[in-house]
Length: 271
Image (tube, rainbow, N blue to C red; front, side, top):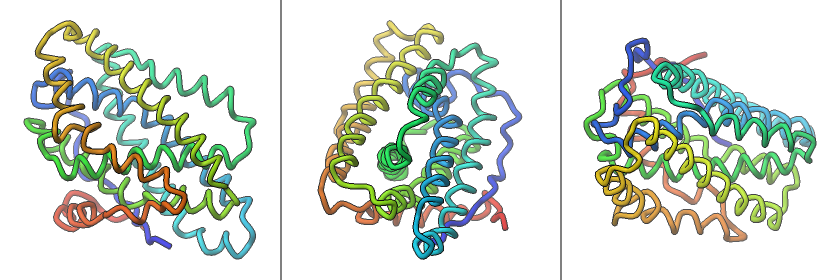
C-alpha cells in the first residue's frame, strides 16, 4: 500500500498564458495544451472508476486500500482543478476543446459497462501518464523556456502521477480483473489516447496558424521521434505493461520522489 499525500500547489494561475507558452515553440505548446484539455474529464473519470472499484471489494481488501484511494482521489481532484484553471486561459485564446467533447461522448456511451472495464481503462491510462511523467522528469528540455510557474505545474503533476501509478492497477487486481481483459483494454486505450491527443494537437496548431509551418513539424518530429523523443524513449516502458506479471511498481519512481523533496516549498500538504 502506498501512502499518498494531497498537496496544494502554491502557484498563481490567474495571470494570462500565451498560446506558445512552452518556450515559444508552437508544437510543444500545442501538444501540452492537448494533454491539459483532456485532464479535467479524465481525472474525474479516474476518480469515479476507482471509487466504484473500491466499493465492490471484499471488506478486508477495501480496508487495505481505502486510505490509498482517498489520497489518490485527493491528488486527482487537485490535478483536475489546476488544469481547469489552465484550460480557462486556452478557452479565452479561442482554442476548441475537441478532446474533452470526444471523451464525454465516449464515457456516456460506455457508462453501463462492468466496473472492471472502467478500472482496466483507468489503469491503462494511468500507465501512459506515469511513463509520460517519468519522461518529463528525465528530460527538462520538454519545458525549456517556459515560465517557472508553468514548469512547476507540469512537473508537480508529473511527480504525483508517478507517485500514484499503482493505485488503479491494484484496485483492478483486487476486484478480480484478469490479464486478457487488461491487455485488450490497454490496446484500445493506446489507440484512443494517441489518436485523441495527436488530433487535438493538430487542431491547436491550426488555431495557432502553425499547422503548415515547417518549424512546427521539425520540432514535433524531434519531440516525438528523436533519440530522446517521447515516443522513441518510451517504447519499452509501454511494452512492459503487456507482460503477464507486470506491476507499475516495477518502474522506478525515484525522480518523482526527488522532485517532491527538492520542491517542497512549491506546495502545501493538505490534511
